[in-house]
Length: 115
Image 1 (cartoon, helix red, strand yellow):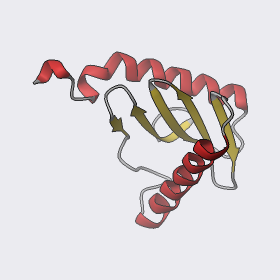
Image 2 (cartoon, one colour):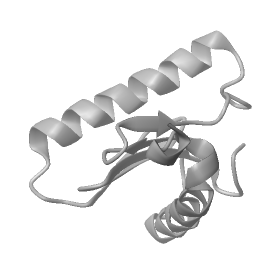
Image 3 (cartoon, helix red, strand yellow):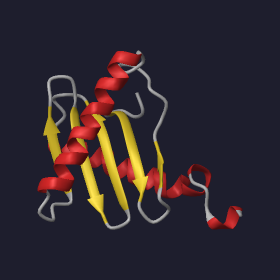
């Protein structure tokens, strides 16, 4: 698992047009469960871009995980959390993750300074 509450995530930086995600680990450490999670992300992504009316955070529950989508002009974050994770705990975990990504940005993304 990625963090206390986070099972997996995909962070897309709109400003850099790059994404980062950790390697798959339990409970997604076999190809079948990893594909299932990626389909979940895809379904949430499609729903968000079809139906979103300006909401910044969307939480979708499932039997195996809760997927939280966090969107703004500069990023898209999709996070898998345990199925019964309360909204407040999900938001707190995502805030911690966003702070970590911002802090580690130079080592996670190829920046113009690297050219």
